[in-house]
Amino acid sequence: MEHGNVTTEDFNPLSAEVAHDPFGAYGRARESCPVHHTTGFDPSFYSLTRFADITAALNDAEAETWSARTGSSPQFNPPIGFNVDGAESREFRTLFRKWLSPSAGAVNAELIDTTINELIDSMTAGGRVSGDFATEFAVLLPIRVIAHLIGVPPEDAPLLKEMTDEFLGAFDIPDPRGVAPAVRRLNAYFAPHLEHRRELLRAAGITEPDESDLGDTLPDDLLSYMLAAHHGDRRLTSAEIGYVLATALTGGNDTTTSMLTNVVLRLLEDPARWQRVVEDGKLVQIAIEESLRLDPPVLGLFRTTARDTTVDECPIPAGSKVMLLFGSGNRDPRKWDDPDEFDLDRPRNELRRHLAFGFGPHFCLGAQLARTEGHRALELLRTRLPHLRLDGPSERVPQHHLWGRRHLPVRWDHPQTAETGN
Ligand code: HEM
Image 1 (cartoon, rainbow, N blue to C red):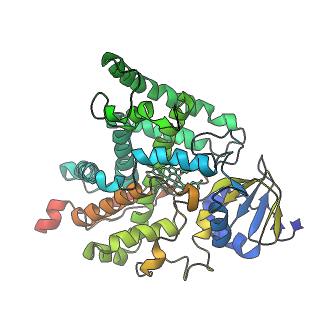
Image 2 (image 1 turned 60 degrees about the horizontal axis):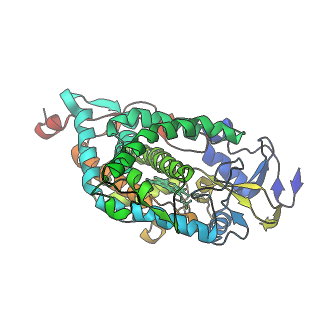
Image 3 (image 1 turned 180 degrees about the vertical axis):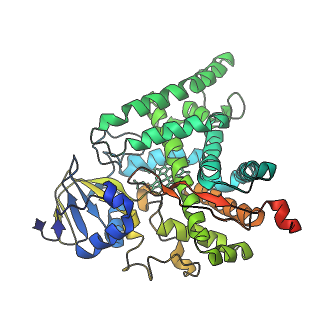
């Protein structure tokens, strides 16, 4: 069935078929019909596939047409935390940005480097020469860093990963209550850590904490900040605290894991490409941006139309869920030359224009931290494990709106062997 350019043919970006080869399916959709209506999902939703259309929707600062108030998943959720529009969103983002400033990556460089070196040490311990880059490195780096920043023990990494996967797995369950058990579990996990900080405040006789108590009475971390911060003239509600903690944990670790596996896979699948990066450290930042463009960890997220609108002559009624397919926009030939190529020579001024971190008023608040983790990981891998190579087939992550590797077998020469030539 067709309305203008909208088709209801069975293109469902959340289906297993599309998830198997998302970029091929996006390319066909983008060229045959830029706006799709998927009726084989409850609720039905639309998708935008072209770079210019996605960017225009993301850039609607006052959300006159494109609202984030019902959340970034396909279900209609109540507005909370970052899932708000306009001035309300800007205010909430300021609060989060105070904690995780754009320079957070640089500030935390030492923590990031130490963590990376520990992970490489443990991968190579006892002369080991092969392993799973996904589970032994890419999962653990961001989760240990974010655990430290939130203020929970890095040893909880396996549990944090399990809770993240449970939360992300509920993204495309039609019933929004599907996410409730995962949220309850996260809240129950964070509760004693918050309570411990409240006890510290009671013991110090502080009833109205503020940010000056961080690093003094309270540890300097996100958990403490949640108790000290003000949102306008009030404190955060417990629902908001739970929401921010869950977003920082789940939004900040799996995505970075995928970025790390995706870039390492692209570099190692062409040994000459990896060799170039080994020989020239200036290519590290280019490799990360090109990976984010070609293989964005988040393939797409949702907005809701606040009024009737038209995209590429296709009518979309008010109140519709619309998936913005970053993975499609990032390979739109109207925007990029040779869009399906991983090109270490792509002009620098084009590199960061991809949509992997979104765009405009909801642009990712952890982008700088994620980029720094990527840069430092590649830098230390190319210098410490220059003979890294693939060691068997990799495996896709299970969530259909995400793109990364959950297993990535690799092999290396033991650093000592490489140096001595033995
Ligand atoms: C490679 C890693 C990452 C990727 C690909 C990524 C991707 C994204 C995307 C696409 C958005 C836009 C959402 C929208 O427009 O609806 C976003 C928003 C966000 N990200 Fe990230 N992210 C990454 C890392 C992080 C990290 C490390 C953190 C925090 C520690 C973080 C925190 C957030 C937050 C709080 C938002 C919400 C902003 C808002 O709605 O105003 N992200 N991220």
